[in-house]
Image (cartoon, rainbow, N blue to C red; front, side, top):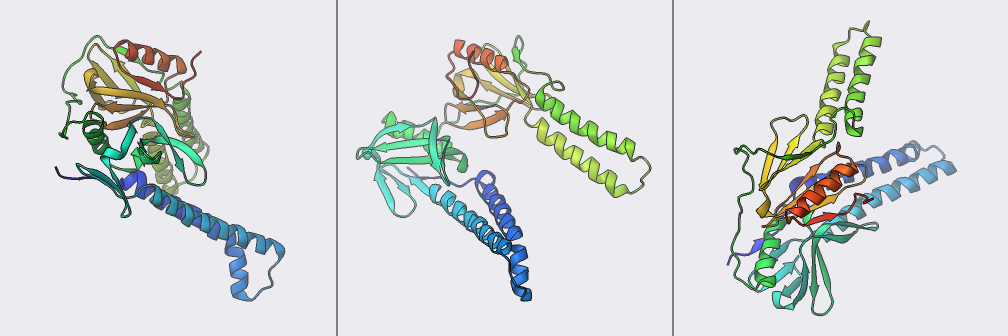
Amino acid sequence: MASITLVRHPLRFYLVQFISFILICGIGCGIASRGVLKINSGTLLHRADYVALAIGIVFVSLAFYMTFRYFRNTPAITADESSIHFGKGEVYALDDIQEIQLTGKVPLSVLWSYPVEGICLILKDGTKKFIYEDFYSNSWELKSFLEQVVVNKTPYVEYVPEINTNSIDIADCEVFKGHPVFSFRGIMLWGFIGFIIFLNVLGSGHSDPRIYFTEIGLSIIWFLAMSNSMNYFELSDEHFIVKNHYFFWKKHTYRIKYIKEIVFDTQPKAPIGLRLITTNFKARQYAAGTLKDSHWLDLMNALQQKGVIVRNECVAVS
């Protein structure tokens, strides 16, 4: 069989690392800039300048260290019919894998340890190897391979289930949705846009078109960003459907028999979302900022009644 090689995700890994590096470095350089300018001009530095220089150096060092840690935690990973390779130096035989956790949270250690979705391989000598799912664009391939070859002891066959059938018309669906305007996300969305309109009314005397274009641009960006996190769900006897309050053309339909697991989770400063994992381990995240805890619990119960595994990691059960 041909080997499977994991590829770092261009957005969730490279773009995030680039933005984080530039942002933290920029903060450090900004803090240290006053002291640097004084050194260049030959001006005597005061205690506050030395403190600013030290803090700036810490921030710049932190940017390099965090980038190094993220790259170290996401090495090039290749699997073939007999072994799995982590980077250039670590090679483990598939027969040495004692236990595999293909879904669930694993610890990611950068400055501190925090849980992310991933794979945990436990070797016979007790060594644990973690593979962080979201940092790779094709981690589902490795999951499918490990399940077939290591867990089920069968030859690897690429499996692509029919999961998205948007053209069919599905009736008698149970709907799980909040209010697109009076939910917290809805109030944030329209409150900001209303504030922009209010400012325009107050400043109706100005004639600079750049101000209008800037305000229109900010409103569009805000609308797109907030609307993207305002999905809702429908459930029929055989299908699970994802729709969006404002992107009316969006409709992702999954056959329930091809859903392996559904996870309710969230990230800091983000709304609760639903991670849908199909039977070939492809995963997709849907943020649903309009749903209340009661909606999530009703959805969990309805899915479990249809035999779907639901992992609730953030919704409080009363």
